[in-house]
Structure formats: structure tokens, C-alpha cells
Image (cartoon, one colour):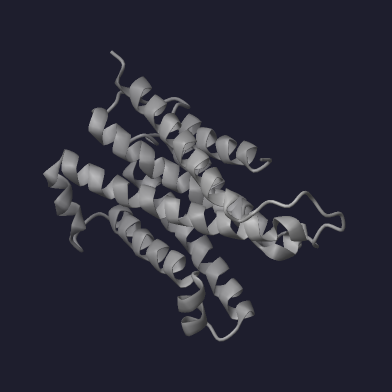
Length: 231
């Protein structure tokens, strides 16, 4: 369960950034809850650069588990992003005005990010992957590039909205964390598969772990919403 610590550190760290000076007032229970789930999706996007699922970086007995966990967490991140969009729309119909091409650039970045996210998640499943990519090496390269582009778009979207990141310091720290961590993880030397094997973990365990991750992030989002709306 060593991956839980970096996940929680990322999720809490991104939200703590919003408390570093500036304003604190909430925007309403529904609005803040939907945005908190957007932050949860952002945290998972960063976490997926840590929990890559790459078999070459894992003991043989753990490779299938981490591969499945990566796929499940990616789907969970996409689910949070969809709920984020749907929740904001349900809370305020005026949000539909931001769906036009005349919307502010940071909003367009958010919608492009959602489309890229759908493409990245869908193309990673075996059948679409084999249909789109002619080799595993090409898939890994393009998958990695698209994932880094996704983090940049998400950073632009959240920092640009300036709702919770209402100072330059907050925006800079948030963007640096959201883009810098995945960039560093991508450019560092690749790990070799550990020589010592580990106790086997079945791929089916990844589903239970994904449920735990989802529940933990929902709890953090709920706490963020509560603190934002306490009077």
C-alpha cells in the first residue's frame, strides 16, 4: 500500500495551495463540491505519473496488479472530471455559456483537457491500443506525451479560473506542482525491474484499492467543501 502515501500527499497538497493567503470564502455547497471533485481528478492525473503501471518497474508478482490499478485509477479520474463538469452545470445553468468557443481560454483549456483525457483513457485499453498504435514503444511514447499535455491543460484551467487560486503565488505553486512533478518523473532515468520478488498480488485486488482511493478522495473533497462553507 506504499502508493497511498504519495496519493494523499498530492491530493491534500493541491488543496492546501488554495489556503496560502488570499481569499477563502466558499462559492456555495454545490459549486465547491463540484470543484473539489475537479481537484480530485487533477490529483489523480498527477498520481498516474507515479503509479505508471509499467511492468518493467515492478516485481513480477506485482506487475499485473499495478497495471490494472493504473487503468482503474485513470477511469476514476475521468469519472471525477465528468462529475465535476456535470455538477457545475447542474448548480448553475449559466455555466453553459462557457461551452462556446467564445469562452475564456482557461475554460477552453478545461474542455480540451477533458477530450484529451477521454482519448488517453480509451486508447489505453488493449483493443483500441492495438488498433491505433503499431508498436508498444509508440504507444508508451505518445501516451506519455499526451499525459504531460493533459497536466499542462489542467493546470491552465484551474489556475486560470482564479477562483481558489486567487494570487500569483498560489497559481505559480499549483502549476509548478501539477506540471513539474509529472515532468520530473517522465525525464528521470527509468527504473530497472527489482531483483527481489514480492508477495503476489492478484489483479482483482486493484478494484478494491481503486474503491479505497475513490472513497478517500471523496472524503477529502467533502472536508474541503465543508471548510469552505462554514460560517
